[in-house]
Length: 149
Ligand code: DQA
Image (cartoon, rainbow, N blue to C red; front, top):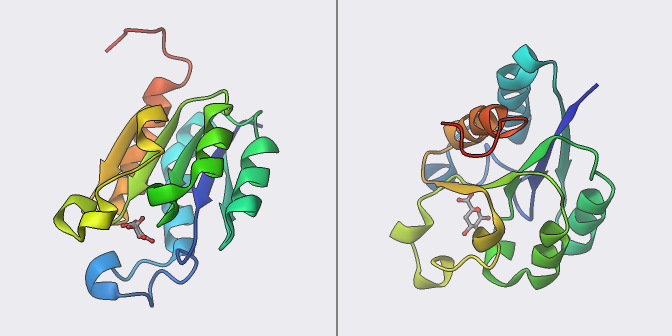
């Protein structure tokens, strides 16, 4: 069974009751279900990891090199998560960085991601829908010959 890795960083386990005007009302469980539904057509299952600590996220990435690809919302670790960056640098499959909110429209300190240069793509500001779009993108990126549109 092929598996897609879904990684969510600090404070994303309380989605649905976290600053809903910014992050929306979908819970993390809703998001996991939506991603699972999106990739079911390919027979992929979702391995979902959420943790408040960077070390546990790194461990999850190291333990899941056999997954087909990953969706990563690092939360505020985007700003200075250098160890998470190193872990993702060694992740052998395509991965997409997702942020629910439009970080560019927010405080200056959210405008930099140390992870984004390594990602296959970044989806920002589209709410929970961003995860579904990332899953769709991975369906196309994984096993596609390089350069094919
Ligand atoms: C976030 C944006 C980050 O700046 C913030 O620290 C989060 C959530 C988002 O999904 O919009 O925790 O990653």
